[in-house]
Image 1 (cartoon, protein in one colour):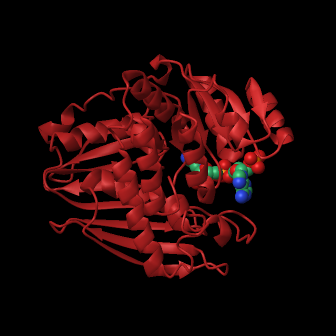
Image 2 (cartoon, protein in one colour; image 1 turned 30 degrees about the vertical axis):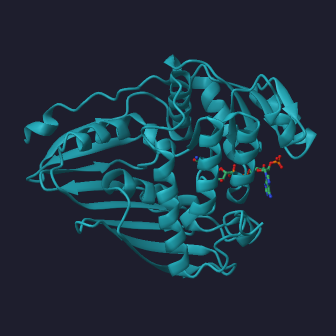
Image 3 (tube, helix red, strand yellow; image 1 turned 180 degrees about the horizontal axis):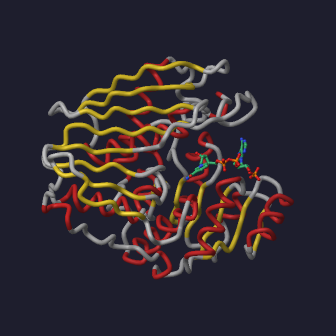
Length: 354
Ligand SMILES: NC(=O)c1ccc[n+]([C@@H]2O[C@H](COP(=O)([O-])OP(=O)(O)OC[C@H]3O[C@@H](n4cnc5c(N)ncnc54)[C@H](OP(=O)(O)O)[C@@H]3O)[C@@H](O)[C@H]2O)c1
């Protein structure tokens, strides 16, 4: 066995319940907002104290179902609540920029669901506004905050894989084709790349940084959104990320990083708490770390919320583990991939398209 992997580093923040409590407000009480709120209330001291919807009835129903104190029939009312510290933007992709800017203008810190915006240009608008207002802003790329990701991060920082040459990741979902669903609706910036591809491009960025070149090939759904895409991202040194995403077939959701002195392979799925296997430079399994913490599936979103609470309490305005500039660069890669695959209206829902 290679000595580098016989003793793995400990994850640095395994307990999201020890983060200082913030008061959260939710914009758009849909599917992910429900899971996020439940995860916070189950595993952290964070409290969702207010929910805002386009209709008062939906806001009230969400509040009653998820233990939220106050509900509002507009997003404007939600961001005006003086007893909200941070706003979680959980609307469809096309609404993220408008709603993040609304929260920032009200002086709130903001956590924005992935993708942070529909285009890199819009993500830049959010970053600029947050910096000007002095508030914290972050894309909700929750994989970055999982314990297993922190082990891999520490090994990468220590150079334990040697010269990283090949990175892989796949994330495909088996959705039924439904032109009315946000996944397939071009007016809501549907498509695999923005919904699931953001995870695999983010994994590549985590291991290799921003690519020097992007090659994407794929097919479109009958509605014109990207349905199946393969990407090759190359770094200036010739390292490559081979990535796959799609909407119509569930794929294993595995991710790897391979270098001259070892490699890591995640268990499935790489994007939520699972496990990681470490192999030495001779290809021998050196360690298999299985997540012991009991925050499966979307309960793992509790880690990103805890990280945000720590950062805000420390006075930071950007995440050291996933800075705004990296989220913007990831969207630039997705912009280019969507262009190459032939998505017709790249700017739908963006500041350009409005
Ligand atoms: N982190 C993750 O694992 C994860 C998982 C799933 C989704 N997401 C992200 O979360 C976001 C929301 O996804 P979701 O699956 O929760 O969607 P969803 O269930 O459809 O909920 C979205 C909510 O947005 C509000 N909304 C505002 N403008 C809208 C519009 N023009 N059309 C439709 N709804 C609108 C609606 O609430 P009101 O009308 O009541 O205000 C709706 O309930 C997406 O950006 C997605 O990428 C993240």
